[in-house]
Amino acid sequence: MEIAVSPLPPGLYLVATPIGAARDITLRALDILASANVLAAEDTRTLRRLMGIHGIPVGGRPLVAYHDRNGATMRPRLLGMIGEGRSVAYASDAGTPLVSDPGFGLVRSARAEGLAVTSSPGPSAVLAALAVSGLPTDRFLFAGFPPTSRGARLTWLSELRSVPATLVVFESPRRIHRLLSEMADAFGERDAAVCRELTKRFEEVMSGSLEDLATRTAARALKGEIVLVVDRGQPDGPVADLDGILVSALAGMSVRDASESVAKALGLPRRRVYREALRLTESGKV
Image (cartoon, rainbow, N blue to C red):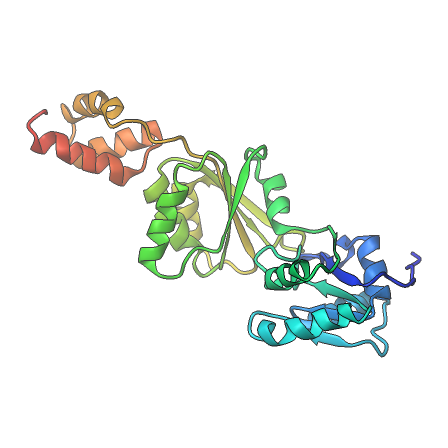
């Protein structure tokens, strides 16, 4: 494989890097890493290791860290280098820059100053997970990481519940069971896929309903990067559509059993159905 080393016009070059397998990098990305005057990365150790695997020397070029903690300080420095006529390659830690990545502020500032910004597309955990999940790909929403506090997370889930698109979420292996359980309560019966260690040696995709996946992950100590893909929901219909079915179910079941049965049959959040069942019984309609 021959790597082209030729001068690059001044500008910011966004370089997508592998999410696992080192050979997933593109030839154009290698050319940029070999030719840029300045190298910037979320993690310089990761970039140096990747370049070493592909035989690209750093040489005497600046290799600087750019991340959330030093962004305010480093942005003016990097933009100043571009303004002086140099090319700056920015590489994410893994995947495509600006997807759950601190590069957004850098690109926004570069565009505001009229500097050229070029993307070298490549690996993306979002698209890789969508491709292997078996869930609809014609419309999707990347929702990032869930909020850490329970209240904010439940609000976040409520906002996502009726989105008419497949959902893609990043989550820690330590918290995936909690998220699946909360999603099962908020979303009801819905298909999903837990995609773990994509492109790596121990890649795994677990498919099933949210409730089933919550049960399966509870019994395992998962490791590695996780992408959760969840099938789209249906817009909430009027409560009146639910009443007749609930009245019939409540004739022979308890409020709890009727709520669970109807929620599962209609793919509705159990809490919503339970609240409606309580309303019907308290109003004397059952």
